[in-house]
Length: 504
Image (tube, rainbow, N blue to C red; front, top):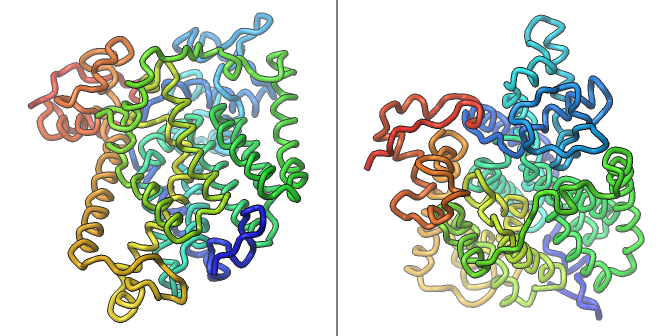
């Protein structure tokens, strides 16, 4: 049964989970992490544009205990992704992202002492640090996949527990391989990977807290930390803070207590380094001019053949369906309403940027941070699909709305309609994996940004259906002059892009 209190909040009995998640999931979580880490490490391609200074900052922290880039002069691509304060050079993009590379810098230095590596300092100065970027972000995406697995266990109401585990594993792998988590977050030290991980942890803490377990402080800490990774995560913070104030006011101090430490660290470091509470990137250092073509940007972020969320990851439609499922079941509580609002506000904000397409990138990069939110919103729809696909007697009972002792909505759809929806979902899954794989594996998928012309100089290419980015990699692989070059392992920015025309 779902129940709410007078303020419309979900009580312990009315939480999304039907009971405690099944125990004994450590082995499954470990296997998931290893598999995703291995896939991301094996994927050969990636763009190193904005993250060009990330490893340098991590190396500076380990060796010189400083965020300054002075010791790495002359810098590759001088003038890009830097800011100068009192004559010293510092990274423009959020320095906190580099913390995820610190353990790998230490390991690389240990390998150097054993004669197995050139060492992190030499690696940075030679410009060949993309491998260290990938191992850092592969670990981040693997960790986020494990968090998504536990999120699915908490939200899905499938019985027996082994069935819930199987579907939770499927959801986690879909997150890792059918979304920008693979094609963007794992490919270089963008802000999106760490941001995505923090948001996922915050959501898991929020669900735990509503079940009466510890989580309010963790939620505050995770969401506050996400802001140190990516400024647009302020949208998540504002919406979730509003939810706490309106519906969970008695826990406000706990949430604030968790949020204060990471924010204090962020502001303290910024004051010491940049001499202001927020770094220049947060205060307009990227010249985020407001778009003069808002309608085009709004449409482009959803359906452009180069940046459209629904084009590159049509599975996101399940998030919309999931909200409808909860609404029809009378379970759209204040928490789920808040989650549903976040993507809409995020879409509007990123569409307000003059360069709404995110420069040199693959697909809907600006939506990458919200993938955990999309997954959680989609879980009610996933649950319905699981019930429709259940074998034998359970499927028939559940389809009629009485399965597992939990009401699942209106009467069973016609068999043909149910099969069509399942088939379309499978097609969307296969499409999403195929498209995301190109961004992670095939060099030309990234080179689309610069060949035949620079997309920043000719943004009309974002609407060119005769040469869509989501198909460039496979087209070049099949008809290009040298298909083997598609699998060259390194950052595309360092390798450069082939100038040969794409075949028909």
